[in-house]
Length: 326
Ligand code: WQD
Image 1 (spheres, rainbow, N blue to C red):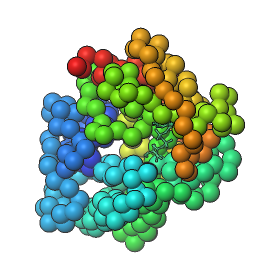
Image 2 (image 1 turned 120 degrees about the vertical axis):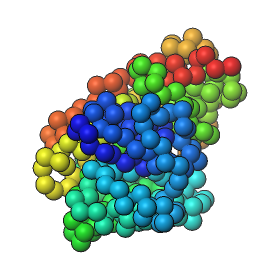
Image 3 (image 1 turned 90 degrees about the horizontal axis):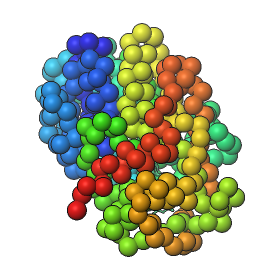
C-alpha cells in the first residue's frame, strides 16, 4: 500500500473522509475529488490533495486520468432514500450519469481497479434475516435502484474493459473518528442518529419515532449500524484483496447485529445527559421492521469485521462532534 496513489471520489463527505483517513493511515497517497456540495474541506487530513470538481465534467475527468491512480474509491452520490422518490432526475444525473462519466474516464487506464460505495438499499425489504449477499435485490426506493444499476455497469465494465471492482454494500453508517480528526456534521441530516443529536442539542424540538408497533423487541425499527471507521478499514481490506487476488467482489458491510430506535434514543440520553423529547407517529412508508447483515462473506474474503460498532462507541464519538457546539 505504501506509495499507492488512491483517488477518493466524494472523499470530503462524512463516510468518504473516514475512508480517506483509513487509506492515509495504511500508507497510501490520497487525492480527493469532491464538489463540496455536502462534503467539507475541514474533513480532510493534512497531506491530502483536494481537487474541487464533480463527475458532471467529463473534461475534468479526462484531465484527471491523464495521471495514474493505483485505485479509485467512488463514494460520491446523493443518498437520501426519501428524496430520491421525489427527485429521480437528480438521482439519475448525480448517481448514475456521474458514475458512468467516472467509469468511462477511468476504464481507459490499464489495470483499473475501483471500489464502489453501494448500499443495503439494493436489497429492498428483507425476505430473510440476516441478509447475505445472495438475498434478492429488489430496491424499494430510487436511490437503491441507482446503486444497483451502477453495480450492473461495474460488472459489464469488468467484462468489457477489464476493470476490477469491489462493490461494498453498507448498512447504516454511524459514528465518528475516535480521535476527533473528523468532526464535520452532515448538512441537513435525515438519518436517525444525527437527528437524535440535533434534538439532544435543542436544535430540533423533538424526535418523531416512525412507529412503535413493529414486531421487534420494543416495537421500534431495528437497523444494523456500522461505524464509519470500520467502513474505512473495510475499504482498505477490499483494496488489498483486489491487488492480491484476481476477480471482483460484492460484499455486505454490517455487524450482523441490530439496534432499535428506542435503544438509540436511550443511549444518546445516557451519553449526553440530555432529555430526548420524542413522539411516536405513524410508520414511515417503505420502512422494514428489522434489517441486519450477515457479515460472514466480508470476514472470509476481506479478513475484516466490525470492531468499533458497539452502540455506546458510535453514540459517544458522534456526541463528541455536537457537544461543544453552541
Ligand atoms: C433508521 C431507523 C426509521 C429518522 C437509510 C437509507 C439507506 C441508507 C441508510 C444510504 C428507521 C427510524 C429515522 C427519524 C425515526 N442510506 N427513524 N425517526 O431508513 O434505515 O436507511 O439510511 O446508503 O439507503 O434508506 O435509515 O436513519 O432513515 O432510519 O424513527 O426521524 O430510524 O424508521 O427504523 P434507514 P434512517
